[in-house]
Amino acid sequence: MRTFWNTNHGLHTIDSWQPNCWVQVTCPSEDDIKFLEKTLHIPDYFISDIADTDERARYDIDDGWILIILRIPYVKEVRSRTPYTTIPLGIILKGDVCITVCNFETNMMLDFITYQQKRGLGFTDSVDMVFRLFLSSAVWYLKRLKQISVLIDKAKQNLDRNVSNTDLISLSRLQDSLTYFITSIRGNENLLSKLKFKLPVDELDADMIEDVNIEMSQARETTSIYANILDSTMDTYANIINNNMSNVMKMLTSISIILMFPTLVASLFGMNLINGMENWVWGFPLALLLSVGVTFLFFWYFKRRSWF
Picture 1 (cartoon, rainbow, N blue to C red):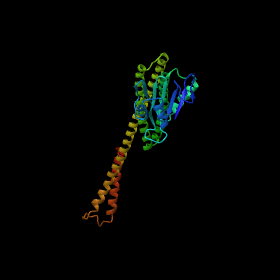
Picture 2 (tube, helix red, strand yellow):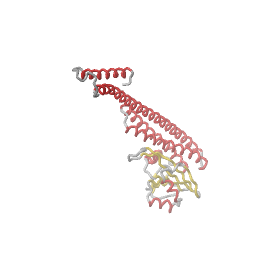
Picture 3 (cartoon, rainbow, N blue to C red):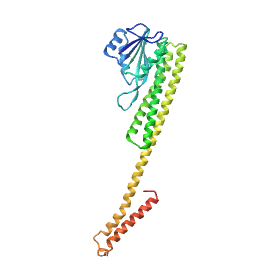
Picture 4 (tube, rainbow, N blue to C red):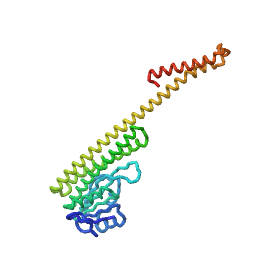
């Protein structure tokens, strides 16, 4: 699906492409790809690079065309190992052509358009729009991190009551998500530092870049903090599980040792040997009493030593 936006004095949709308009392509169909390649004449490999979900944040220049790939946060609607991940957003520039291509429907882009419409000022040029997209991505990283923080606290509360595999797996998935986040944020920061020298930056753009650096730095530090918290949390619960297992094994071993002594007494008096007790009326009660006495004696000893 493609949408044409007039970016002068606000953000308004138009029916067809015009010079200096913004072409937004979301989940491109074959018709959209044909329009980009045949009508706007963008390099065909730009589309395939943007479609690669593992493509890193970078820029590329080919015959005057500039491709900027920005990593933005994305929440998967279906259940998966990494509910929070990052996806590439492609920005293609050349002269009076400005295109964004994303193969996923994202809340970030919807919010970006809504905010710009409320702002009512549009963009001074395509470079201004690029840096505003950088700023929006940093803000949305912080929003997603707040959601992850809530999920971490919820899982920890459940684990405090009962250590379950479900909550541990949930924390492990969030740990994977944070790894994607911090890698993508660092890539975006490196990309931004390079674009400052590749794009025509004016004074207003310089102020915007400073704001983007602040937001990205905050997002990176927040992600690192949450990742460290998750690492320590997983280590703590791993130690708790090992300690519980050790206690269970200690108890089972103690029970086995305690039961070994009455078994030994019963084995000695149950052997086919003449011991003088086989015809004695108190022989069996004596062996039984001896077994019970030895059991309680070692039970008391183990309890005193905190082995049981």
